[in-house]
Length: 299
Ligand code: SAM
Image (cartoon, rainbow, N blue to C red; front, side):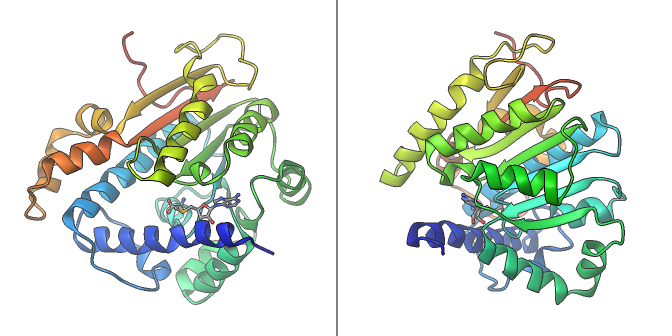
């Protein structure tokens, strides 16, 4: 049985997916599968479009960097995956050997399976006979059941290169549970990257709690040496780097791509956009044979 706050958290997925569809429809980035998963189309503002554009760019950056470094046979585990379409996009791009695991609450997983079954191409990609796609239900606060799920039921390897993703997901968990999840990943998998795109420093009351939570969560990661080949810290990771989204936009998105994006819609909310970007970060931590995904900053 989900608690009422868990149901509220699951509702955040409905807002995300409708915003992503609106952003794709306005031409900010391509996603051939988004319309299969967005049930209630809604037109969002250009400010929201830009926010979802940089979020998509950050996630594409993470996937591209990880997949360009690794053997094609690797593992990706998406925490709080919601109706994210990345698995289908990667399959369409020819990545056919990745063990791809998506985890969310039971109700979200049941709805997503229904949407997949309604769409013949998605159903085909999700039902390959060598079963590389695993859309499964779990509460990420329950580590014993997560361990059982990933190793007993899905039979993942603790040593294959593994990318953990949290795109606006683990900030919805209490601080203790998300810290334990990050620690569990760092101590259970020997070659891994943990990548997050999450919100920090927002203005509302709920956001302030999340900010504290995420800063606390990040401290053990951010206090790591920026260089690999060191001994893992107590929560398992050897290197970590973080960019706020203003830094990410100006340093890691090519300027011609930004020029293309700027021409898409009339826009005059520059201050609002900068402020919004300063409320989000992209952070990656790595260990073992996996290299950090973000360039190490001069310090
Ligand atoms: N990552 C997706 C995206 O960016 O489109 C969905 C993001 S949505 C804002 C957050 C997701 O995290 C929801 O689908 C929610 O159900 C899931 N989530 C939050 N806490 C969770 C938990 N303890 N266990 C499993 N899923 C959780």
